[in-house]
Length: 129
Image (cartoon, rainbow, N blue to C red; front, top):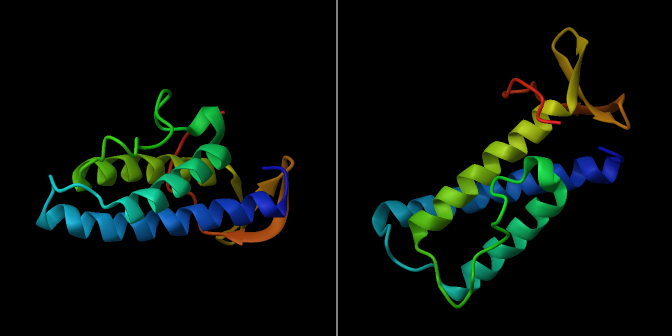
């Protein structure tokens, strides 16, 4: 990561993905094959665009997928599956960009150096860089 703003964008992305996943998964459990309404799809696509920007090519979950086609409305289960993959890659990206200072304290790495921005411990092992 290059700046504090990159960390803020990543943390915002993770929060948005988690929120969308919670909401769409609940819908998917009730009606997995129902189409996502246009309002929700617009929000999902906006978060996916941010995800593509933040994660870059190295961490983007699907090489040829950028967002859902609004003319071919996806089902709740389709959206849940894609959001899950973005969540996994966002966590891998976060895990690859934190370091331990000792004593169980984790900090984000900015420009290849430990910053003063605290983080949780990594949950994914192995750099994808």
